[in-house]
Image (cartoon, rainbow, N blue to C red; front, side):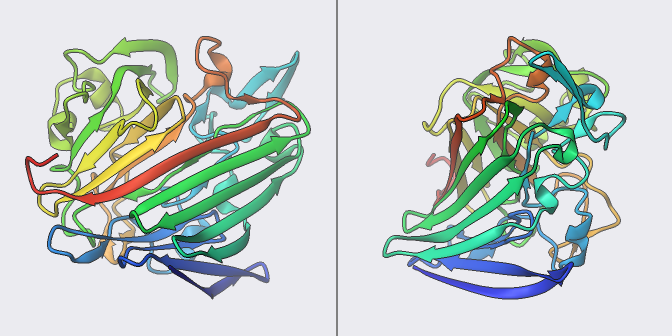
Length: 353
């Protein structure tokens, strides 16, 4: 195991550091102290070729806007909050409005534009980096000073683990996720339409016209959202279903998970043989198939387009502050927010899974 760090550029006079850690098999992860952005995951295909399986920019400057949130940590609250406001302990809080009068992914700056303190580490069986950031009281409209630590760890089992930890001096909404777009074809040789996705979930959230949960939990049975036995992305996005059409002919939906840390999310690319297992203790996962990816940008040197990547955002359910029947996303003062999501990269031939 080894780790290398180098300065990529500066923002406001502060160095932007790229951390690259490599395991003994040759798998490699690169991330930045800007937004904890993951810019590279080199994973093997069935022929032993190591290629990048995430979407990223080749230059730093596009990350200053980063409208698709490539590779970034999202906080304080992942997803949308209706009307950019919520009530907590009898007080109404107004948040930054950055999408149709609603609050999305933590606001204008959010955690994805923050410069984090990074500390790399390397041990015999694992290497990675621990990032730290303090979100001050009132940032983006949220109450409380929140101390956040996010640790990225790569081990020799080809497991990439994200551990989240946070404490606050006031009650505040908090649910963190990572917004990496995966494409298991390697180096964006093709889109994700022929990837196969399997999720242990019986229910998904109905969305309104602004992509915000209505509060209604729908049964996946007999819908394109039934991924319990697996479907290709193509089958899903081409399905005739109003919720698929609503978000740009694809998925952008929260699923309530039936299982945790039990191979509950499996993404497979038959051509490369790459399989990604995502396991988490979070109650849900937002599946986003890149339906709104802009055409005018380049990703890893390739023109951007719909379905170029898929996000598997493990998190609490979006807009939970307005739906008491959802699992709570409130971090109480003095309590510890702790969450772990593990991404395991394997190789299989078609039919082996």
